Length: 103
Image (tube, rainbow, N blue to C red):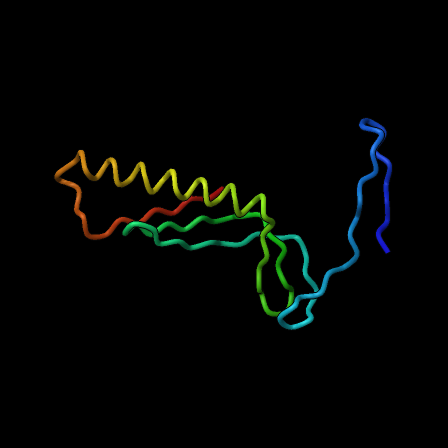
């Protein structure tokens, strides 16, 4: 059963979820950080330090829908910017395009 706390400033209740179990190994899932890797339009992008729920046993990470949308929007924007830059800078190699981002 969820515990509810009243937040005096907003007058709303904040839900504190029960301990969650990992669907992969049944370990305990706790708040943490993860790293996401993408390859889009020839650009490799690694997004580090992403808010997630992480299994303490197997390491599987789970991100919320909102975080996924934000990261996808960021990755798409960066990919567009990199490809635009490469098109305007002939001295930049078309070969390896990699970016690492810490959020």
